[in-house]
Image (cartoon, rainbow, N blue to C red; front, side):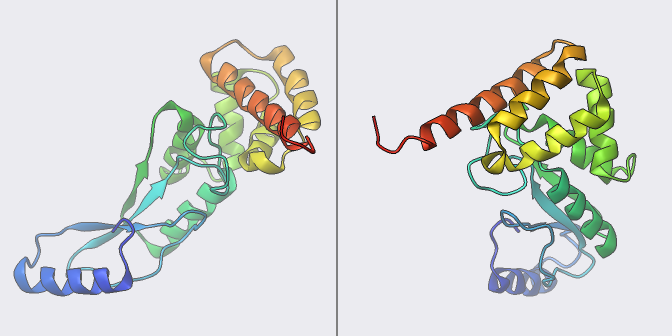
Length: 197
C-alpha cells in the first residue's frame, strides 16, 4: 500500500473480495515520512496487516535521508513504530533499505521486531559492543543524538565522538559514523556564512 490513498485501499479491498477472494494474504501499510503508525484502512478478507517501514532516514526526513549525511539513525522513531505494530497485532513489516547507509536502522528494526531487545537504547548498546567497541552507554547516547543530525551541536558531537573513539575498534562502521560527523561539521560551517562565497 505504498503511497495509497483511502480510496485506493477501499477500491482494492472491494475488488479483491469480489474478484480474488483469499488470494491476497498480507498487505503492507505505508508509513509516510515521520510517521510511526499507519491509519487503519480496509484490507481484503483474510488479509494480514503489515507495515512498510522506511529505514533510509533518521528521526525525521529533513536532510538526513538515504545516506546523504552518512548512516541514518532513527532509534526513537523505529522503537515507536515497532511498539505500534505490536499493539496492532500486525503480522510483520517490510523494511525499505537503500544499502549500507541504514545499517544501524536495520539492526534496530530487526532487534526490536524480533523482540530480542526491549528498547532502542538497549539495542544501540549491543550494537556498540559488537561493532564499535568502547563505552556502550556513551555510544548509545551519541548515536541517538545523531538521529536528528540537523539539530546536533557539531562542537559537542565532535568532543564526545573523540572521547568515545579512544577505546573503539577500527571498522567501516566507525569510519561511516566519523563521516556523518564530518558532514554535520561541514554543513554547520557553510550555514554559518552570512554571504555565499
